[in-house]
Structure formats: C-alpha cells, structure tokens
Amino acid sequence: MNDGNGIPGTDEERRRFLAYVLAGGTAVSLAACAQDTVDHDEVTDEGLHNPLLWAVAWKQTAAEFAALCHQAYNIARLRIDVILDRRKSGDKPLAVITDMDNTIIQATSYWGYLINEGQDFFDDAAWDKWLPKNLITAVPGSQAFLDHCQVNDVEVFYVSNRDQGDRTYEYALTQLKYLNFPYADEDHLTVNRKTSDKMAIKETVSVSHELVLMLGDNLNDYKRDYYVTDIDERYALMERDRDEYGDQFILLPNPTDGHWVRAIFGESEPSPTDANRRLLKDAATRSSWDGQ
Ligand SMILES: [Mg+2]
Image (tube, rainbow, N blue to C red; front, side, top):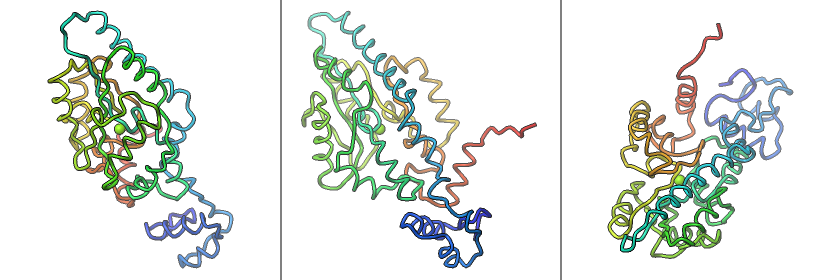
C-alpha cells in the first residue's frame, strides 16, 4: 500500500494523498487514513514525483523549445518563398493546411494546471473546461509565418480534432480570432469532432489549390498512416518519409501529447493507472544501460 517513501501506493490512495496535500493537509493525518505509519519529514510529495514535470518545465522555460518552433516556421517560410518564385500565371492558388493545438496554439498553462491538481495524465474533462477560457498563446513564429502567407495570397486552412460539445466550432474559431490569425473564418476552419483523421480536408483543398505545405505537431496531422499503435512500425513509416519533413510537412515539437502516446499505451488519452505508469517507465527505459 506504500511505495516506501511514505507515499500511498494504490491509485486511490495516491489520489486521496494528493488531494489532501493540495488542500493543505498534513501527512500525519493522511497516514492514519492510509492505515500506515509514516515518518513526518518524508511525506511532502506536493506533486514532486509527477512524471509530467520534465516535459512541461521544458515547454514552459526552455529557449530551445521556442527556437525549435522558430526553426520550423523559418523552414516553412523558405518553402513558401521558393514556390512563390516559380509561380506562373494561371497556376492554381496556393494553400497551406495547419493543425491548431501545439502547432499554432500553445496550451502550456493547461499542463501546469493539471500538475497543480495532482494529475499526471491528460484529463479530457479538465481540458474541456480549460479550453473556452482562452488561456492560450501563439506558438513562437506562427503569427509571423501565417501573416507572411496572407501577404503573399497563400490561403491558410485550419483543421483540428476537438470535441467540447455543441460549441466546439465556436470555441475554435474564437481562438483563431483571439490570436489575430489570418483567414479566421468558416471557409478556412474545419473541426473534426468525431475523428482525428485530417485527410479529407487535404483532398478537398488539393482540388482547388496547390497544397504547398502541411503543418502539425503529430505525424498523423500529415498522413493517416501514422495512426498505428506499434512504436517500431511508426518509426519505420517516419524513416520512409524522411525526405518529406521540412519539404511537404513541417513538424512542431510536443513532448506531452499526440499519437506517439497512443503507440505506447494503445490509446491517445490513457487512464492514470499504475499499469499505465509502468508502460511509461518501460517506454522510457526501452534501451537501458546497466551502469557498468
Ligand atoms: Mg496538435
């Protein structure tokens, strides 16, 4: 029932423990609750062992994170400029398709909120409550890139898979307008509530436009092929397409969510169970060194 550090071991005990600590309670009373004897000084977890901490701290603070985003958008701009240079009269209009969350819209404060709530896995109900609050920022470099597209008549089509009920579309459009992104209108926004498959919009846009680029933080934003649950298969597909990154598809960094998570757990939004925490540890130690 206890992990040896004074922290309750089962999911229910851990949940009660974190709720208690976050509410300002003392460890001694909780220990009584957990029917265990605990050293007073050892029980001050405060979420200090939350496996999200490294990834979220990186997104919150690392200049390297922002630099990677700028790098992605600098390459995207280069691609646009190369294609603009070789345009001939009569060519189809140009277009890009971009994902929204973690590609142009940054939701880092959601993850900080989850951590403060004692949670260590994505929580859909919390996300649905957080999203309409518009506590968002533009991903570094995204605004300048999208404005560059508009100035050069490259139409931007936004596509997202979100589901916050009947107001899903309204929330998404409001966020595009809130961040002053160009082409923030119903002709340029597609929201898939029931599927993460974004290939239909790719086909539709390609009929009327020359599709120059796609942008996303998830390889599934580019091709549905990547919606597989085998880590090695996903890797092999990525190597197959290696020459297309920075050319056809611009990838933004995201260490907290996406279909790489699905490849580990078999689902994109795994439950916060100890069995899943073991799967996460197994993934992190896939190629381990014995220290010798
Ligand atoms: Mg995304």
